Image (cartoon, rainbow, N blue to C red; front, side, top):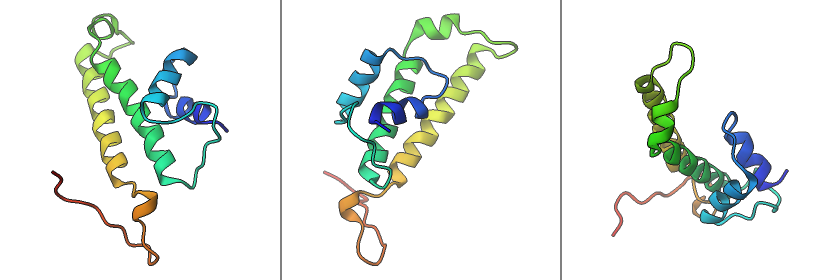
Length: 115
């Protein structure tokens, strides 16, 4: 499975052109044709960061918000659900430890403050 395939799997239900998907992947430092490594926390984090960027792009698009309509869902509900998904994805990304910060006993080290 390539990074592009895994990225599209994460965005299930959101249609992107391959060129657009490539840009999102390149922005986080991933090659779309490279093999996806499921054991790499860095690779997982970058896929999720690219998916987060797509969701943020949707949230920042007035056209999407103006024209979005499905069954009984209003624009407000869509935005709230979208924002909840963005928040959940941000928490998930922060919870994934770096590959180089995992110690031999399985403990992780996270910085609380940064400059």
